Image 1: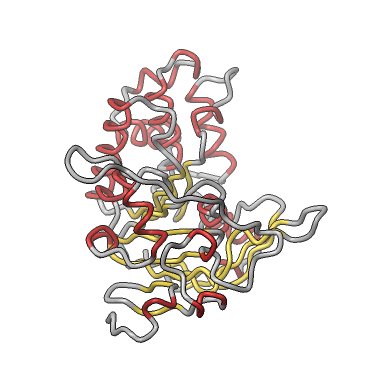
Image 2: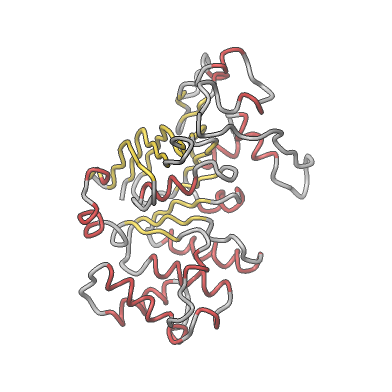
Length: 313
């Protein structure tokens, strides 16, 4: 299912004024493609995912989100819930392992999801199919969350997201707080689901995982998507100075010593009218005192004045 996001802005209300957590984000994703969203904490990654599935508590979303051929922000909440949520698009939430209710069995929690979405089919078969899709034995359904390992709980919440066979799944930090071995198992699971035709939005700090699972990558900084393009282009020829800094922070077995980006991102209470990375950018020029345009590249765009006069397409 094709996903097109245009001029997406999401803001929260606070006692000090509106907080623009996501601002003017654009990207397109073809049917069967997956996108990775990367960036430091509080850059707007999770807010972007919650905005797309229309679950942004206490926030307001503006812009266009076209899923298939329908503008889903124009639908009423009841219509979106009936036609799209969990049926065509679902989400694995950040810290999902802690969302399981400790006093109910896994099966009871699956049943509750199906009831909430007015499922009319065979409950037992649907639940068992979801468990099989994540390589879990159906005997797990009789257990309580505390009886499962971290990896098993993460598979359970992924199975819940797959219950109604959605075509697009937003996975927010699906490997956080898992050991390296379990992380590898979850990554392999996502690879298998991708081969079966499922599309993902994978939100993570781990750029190595994105390189394995994503066709396209969006780099978020201070609420904006400062660079978007194919996975190959982002890794082999990163253009935005922030993207370059992120990639240089990844440890490698051979090569340069990892470096870090000095300074802190700006406040999103009163976003600056200049390039938001200017105070931390080693390549800043005079023009960076104005917000940069979205300059087209071969597979996407970059928001940086350094490329104003270069032919990138």
